[in-house]
Length: 396
Ligand code: AMP
Image 1 (cartoon, rainbow, N blue to C red):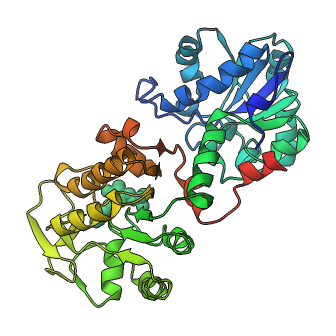
Image 2: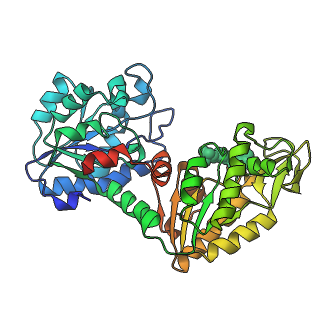
Image 3: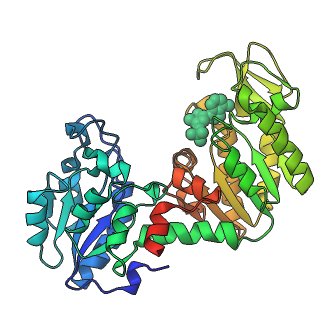
């Protein structure tokens, strides 16, 4: 893997693709600057070498061209503060002004380009657009793991214009190394914990991981389609009728492969999708008609805990319940506690996906697990066994 530690950037103009897709408040102040902080070591390494940095990012999902609320100009002053230097800003990512500003850069200067997604060519992976970006610099660094599963102009297509001068930044390098460790160099017992709302989003990753893991733990809304597949009564719980057959196949496959496929025995139930709903408890084969399962129950918490703490490798993606509401956060919290304990006992624990990362942060456990990935979709696709375009393009 070629990383920025393999190069000296003295005299270079480095096009650095970062993920500055940060949440902005109504007054355009930054809600959480974690993504900006994550990119700082890469930016500073290039500057320390004596290179100039041209930052490229997207922000939000603009529909048809420039939109004030998605302008990256809102982050310039904060970025300047964090980097302790004046960050220049080009209010168009290509065109005359960007060309002029890039040409005028001196050693250690930082230039931020306006939101790449103001051009539809970005998401289309347009080669001519990528070439215009490429012409602004003479080296390409990709440090945006969150978009590594997209073959966009700035995340993948652009790399072809830098046959030699391209590499990964520190965020990407760390993400890839940790994902590879879990995918290829894991220690047994290997436990995958899958949760979240829909089973349809996770079927591919479950199938792919079944070739590797010893234990597959299933929680969250997606568990109820499995119980329906087993003939259970799941009341008003989330069920994807069109995935029932696939769930049956997965259950059979788990038997054939002799892995422990652990579904939550019971649920915390509610009569409505609300924190103020009337609560109950039920075993998942017999949930009352007017109730829905919104968290795993006490027995499930115990059985999941017992498996997780004995594991040597843990991959966790997706919450065990509607953890955003306090009445349904206990299952996710119990799993987080177990993952922390496993980590303390020497397990390698990787937390992936936006919601599992948010849950770990909510409970204050970020520093107590081995690694919290910055990529939701990208990490999922990696563990589905797909080649990520953003990684392949730099490795090519
Ligand atoms: P995902 O984006 O698929 O990982 O799903 C995350 C979302 O699933 C979270 O917002 C949870 O609130 C939601 N979720 C988890 N468990 C359930 C459940 N039993 N019923 C409905 N939604 C759930």
